[in-house]
Length: 112
Length: 115
Image (cartoon, rainbow over all chains, first blue to last red; front, top):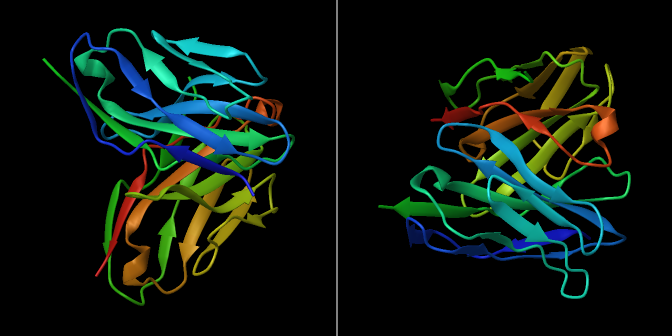
């Protein structure tokens, strides 16, 4: 079956630090990959996506590259801000299947 | 702007009560979903609906049912609430043209406590 594994949180960083949140996946077929973000008190929203190998998704200074050889989709940001504090979810979907499979989420806390 | 509205942000119910969680979207999306979110378990799909009056079981449908009588509304029903259904419930919708991109639009969630 399909699964997504994310690094355990919480991740605590100082403002302007470099962020990496690891995500690896197992999928039957060729998945599309996503990062969703959940700010405190809100629902999830799509942060970025990549639909094929070697694609790079980017948004709001965040980036993630679809690595088929390592089945990974790690989220990175060069300089985090306090406003980036949130829970980040990696997810995948395969082909025309409508279900998204989510990871367990990684909480990021950025301090001044 | 896209809007998914869940009727109740916080609910407290007693064991054995029947619980309705309502979700409305204003984007004319055909697909709608109910997830529950629990610490350490991420999001797990309960039920989804491709279109009006259609429904399919997700990964954890036991103890839940759904209703989709109108395109904009997708209700989650707990026939007899139990304490292990205490959770955050998230509704989402998607335009079918989003099937390739997978973009779901989420509501803010309904936190249910069953005593």
